[in-house]
Length: 93
Figure 1 (cartoon, one colour):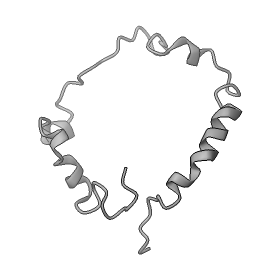
Figure 2: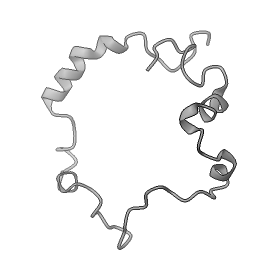
Figure 3: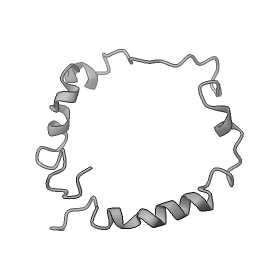
Figure 4: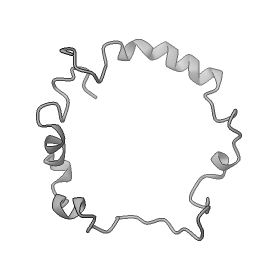
C-alpha cells in the first residue's frame, strides 16, 4: 500500500503495468481475457442458493448484527490518521 499515488503499481502503465507484474508471469493473459483458463478452485455447489461454502456464523447473522460492533468502530477511529493523506483521485485534478 503506497500512499503516494504516483508510486503505486498501475500509476504509470495503467492495467498493463499490473498485468505485466511478475506475480502474474505464469498466466497467459490472452487466454485469461478470452476466458479460456480453468479456475484453480471451483467450489461444489448443489443448488442455486447453496450456502455450504460459507461459515455458519455469517449465514445466521441478522442484517443489524452484521454491522461493526462499537469496539470495531473504536479501533478504526483510533487508526484513522494512518490514511489521512491516502486517496485514489489525482491531486492534479
